[in-house]
Length: 391
Ligand SMILES: CC(C)=CCC/C(C)=C/CC/C(C)=C/CC/C(C)=C/[C@@H]1[C@@H](COP(=O)(O)OP(=O)(O)O)[C@]1(C)CC/C=C(\C)CC/C=C(\C)CCC=C(C)C
Image (cartoon, rainbow, N blue to C red; front, side, top):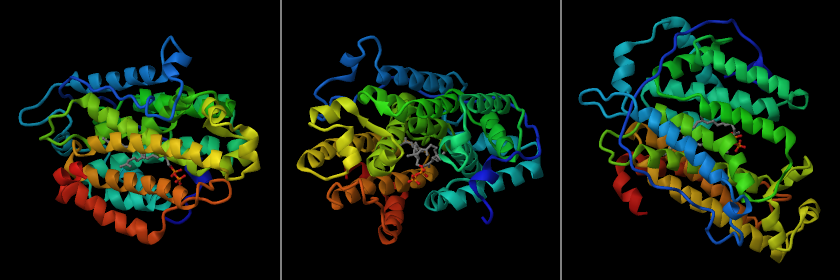
């Protein structure tokens, strides 16, 4: 799309409304994800915070999201998270205006996240546009603290953004992008909590520039990225044949968000340091014999390599956890998820290929590798999902 920029994304547009409700369910039984003890940490975060760890607090949100889905009645011949028919049967009330709102979301997506946009093409039209609407809201939220006007953003502005969020969940949309999301949340069992939590993550980012331990970092990563997984699952839907518990799929989705954000942090160490930010856990840096000054100095040493190996190992473990859940998603939704996972995971390979110099070199995945990932992701998603579980 031409003319999509950070300012236009945040500028208000004509206010239109859409109605609100919520919807659907599945089995219980859960598998608890614990990646704190993956060998990179000498001290456990739960010990650092003996009352309740971030992992436990986030897990409560996961359980709540899964419970919301289970509370909704199953329809004959429909699995709990298989709402495609529901959407098609009920139709969309404000036809043209909503179509326009969604197509604007698609344009933003195509502009900002080309590969992801391509990946959504395989999804059903209803799911595709719902994911675009979520994407746009996330992107706009992120731009409040990371965009061109970020230096003017105050807690008050975030409060207004949150009020606007509550309004759109109640069917009162301020602009076209909001209207699309308002429609989406009225049709899929998407809860407001992960959205509120993402705003909380932006608040945290405004006031915090150091993370004492992985427990603190975990919470931040949940807020800004794990939430995306929780928002997306209800729209992407589960495979009708899936026997997995809803919790385990939400956990995998959470893990993908965490893995992506940890990878982002590892890729951007130098860039963040130049903004005075160090996201890496302070206690782990200290255990490796490193401190902030080593990061500001930006010299790749043996200590740094060894520290980075541990961080990369942990990020990969979250990716592994995420992979286990993708096969449980509705078949048409798997491709963009596999594609995004593969592309992000390769950033870790690229950090290694740069000999862990994430101070002066930006790890990236080249075009050829990106293009090659798409058919492989397609294969894992559609052609041989069973085989991909064994890889
Ligand atoms: C299919 C799919 C991938 C859907 C998600 C689409 C979506 C709603 C994305 C929103 C992304 C966004 C703009 C988030 C705002 C906060 C933020 C910036 C988070 C970081 C993303 C990277 O964004 P960016 O474009 O800035 O990256 P670059 O710096 O340009 O490289 C994050 C790192 C996190 C994004 C998190 C995800 C994509 C998690 C997706 C998880 C799922 C879709 C769940 C999948 C389900 C299972 C069962 C595994």
